[in-house]
Image (cartoon, rainbow, N blue to C red; front, side, top):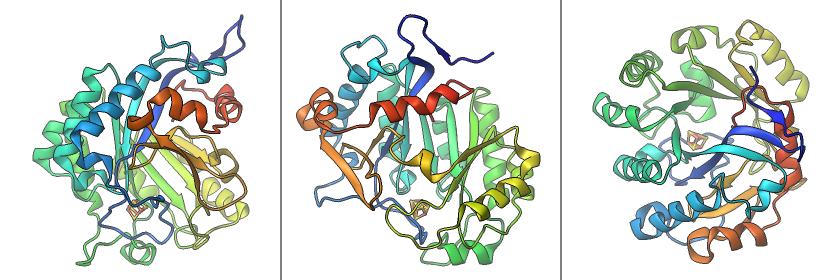
Length: 312
Ligand code: SF4
């Protein structure tokens, strides 16, 4: 049954979860050539200041509470729950801060999830993380070491992600938290576009496989044409049951995102770079969101065709 429907009175799309992606840091142990995790500003990242982080979480939890009908987004979309999704950079460079944020978000009534490159996940850490999140997403672009090195998915010491070990750990996480969803993210780019990810998908058995086309927001390096992107999708059609495809047109101005300095940001349509709100913890979520020129209509229209009711 679809969770998403058009409300009869308001004609607003209704979704189960509104997801706020908080990119907590720019720092990462990888250096992907297409990395978009670059934000303006020299101020300290909020994650290193617990007082400011708490303020941000409080603001987000109350402003996006489904019961807060004064949120302008409610004019275009309604939702039943809020999920705070931590991303980066690599959020697990700061494991203690991540656990603290997730626990606090939970206590404020939000669901929680995390996107990671997977390199810093250990058995001990997973024991603490798995009960706190409804989803762990891992970015994996290729099975081949050579392709991963070419993309930049390698750290300074030459270490790459060990797919087999990570798959084992995530299988264990699913036993710790049977409700946990595992998601893989793949960015189709000039180096992996001809590859076959079948073995990787079979190894991880993700609940969802989200596939992006290389998005030229920060750099056009490794961009691929829509024909090449479509060919990648067609080659993996046997996984369409878990596949979720995002092309550039859909990705532009469609995510509700916070940067490491606690500002809403979105892609600037037709140009490189982002547009930002004021810091949420400083001016409050209401003012930050209202002053910022967010494309509410574009955001909401994206979900009238969704089938699982989650804003992803
Ligand atoms: S793993 Fe993610 S954050 Fe790190 S360099 Fe690659 S794209 Fe950027």
